[in-house]
Length: 130
Image 1 (cartoon, helix red, strand yellow):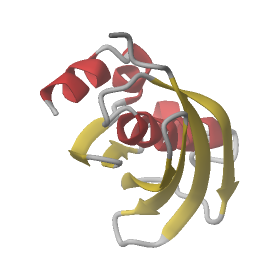
Image 2: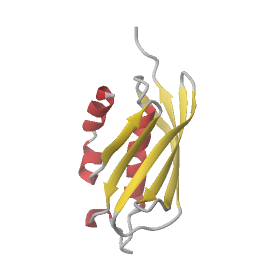
Image 3: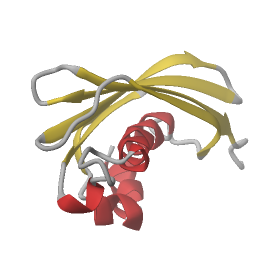
């Protein structure tokens, strides 16, 4: 998992947004982000792009946890509830895995566990070189 943490450490946008790794494992990952002023939209609630970025970070970690480079080919998010402050968490779980494709669901929650958004993504796995 050290390679995965090194991989994540190169994600400058996630670092800029304040996203931190909470937990990683094969096919799963949890990250968090404290809502700051830069994350808010004109309504004073967290921007949809900030939520997508948080979920995408967990998705990237979970999908690259098998040691084979994985690139997103599809991603979708549904926003369920707004947030204005506090800590947000994104927990990615592997739904399906085969040699070329992987499917993941990411649950975004607030610090009380209330659902904020649900994200689903698919990756293409590059063929390992021998």
